[in-house]
Image 1 (spheres, rainbow, N blue to C red):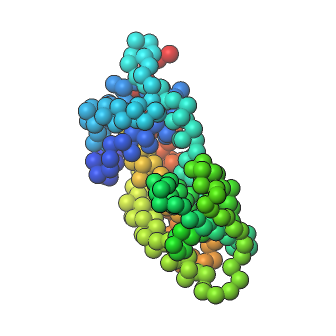
Image 2: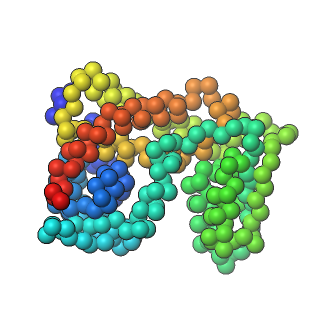
Image 3: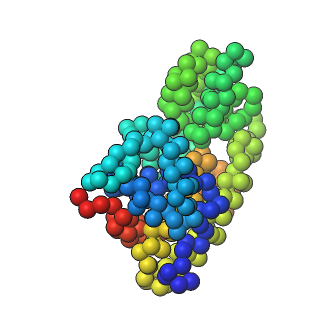
Length: 282
């Protein structure tokens, strides 16, 4: 693979908005929380996003309250809002540092709720929120996660005003169904492992080729870096970080994390230096 080729998997198969969100989190925040729209379109073009696609994604993020129009030095652009910065910061710990395996001896957090039909939308929101936090569905209206998720579960319930309809318990598994079997029934752990393996299959050869060549074209560094970040950032959210001894011996999560960190270490500096050329000189 020559150093002038684009990244092996371009963003055409991924929604333009998710690539732009990855761009905001991984690049724009490092550039003073502001992006020139023209320069951003030029940067994202090699990833398969044309000008209209970028502008549409930006428009939707503006409506969502993530971006404000702001010109700098006569150049039209957009600034990240406090809401965007909060949301991006909230995901950093999971995306960049992964969800570390919980300790088995710390126990489990169980959430049970019975929300009236009149508040069905809130019930659905709570289910979605618990799932995004890494809870698995044990049964009807009952969810489980490592005990460290207690505070996050209580916040989610409180924010939706569902405290009086919910109960949160923390304790140990002491008897009954085999715990590992229960966990594999409560999460799609096989599917999560498969996504980790797909990440390794896609980007492992890229990392090997870059390491072997020792030279990375700046544009390719940027394109590959953003493609890696965009491909990775959804994976840790799906991983509940269960105790390692309860997972399959060939669980691929640690290898995927190591590969992601290796690629970031190699590409990040070069990618940001390339992006900086598309920002106006202050």
